Image 1: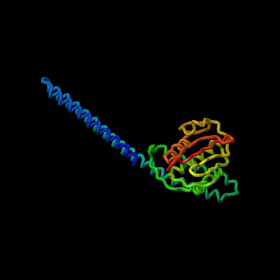
Image 2: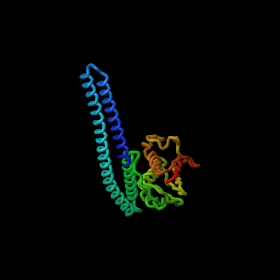
Image 3: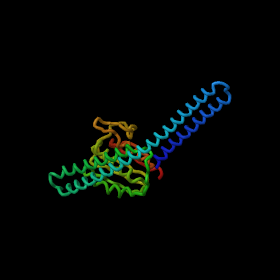
Image 4: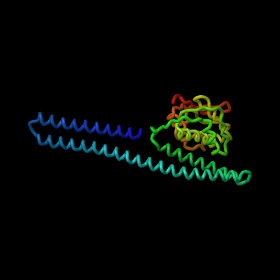
Length: 274
């Protein structure tokens, strides 16, 4: 809805411009005819030509704005449909891999099954990141009260290669989809960049503090959250923490990057209001 309102303002601006310029050209034509005693035919011809091209340009501008709206709507529908189908297949694959991992527990093949689970979760996250990254910045937000401790308990089984620890409990008003993307990117960041065996979510009031037991952070703290910032040569695009910060702002979270006493990265997210 917000995107439609944005494009409607474009149409309104184009209509105002069209009315103003046509009125100005018409006024110029009328004034020329009133005070000119000679070459009235030339004035009429030039005036009508000017009005025609100004009006034609305005109509063309409005037409292309409407075409842009239709194209964006179809593109968003395509991405949403494709994302839904792919996520359904990926979720089915992940569930099968999790079942296989449980069946093979204690056997040499269990490690391969566990790797399939983690790779599937990573692909799901990359798919969701790509979809959100392609959405307009003024995306819709649907707030609901969520118990963060219960929510984290439900998703930590998707990450067999890292211990997800939860301390405390709190209930916040957030968008569930955005919360899912934020938490999964935080866990994935700890796995990929810190190579952490465990990650801890400390919940207290309106604050979420995320720390890990991985490698020390060696990059620039003030550049974290910037798109395409790579603090290590093996780092990727930096989209994960960028989305953490951007989506956090959408649900009224202030994100701060700091260092723990042991030099590992600590991320503090505090909800200002809801």
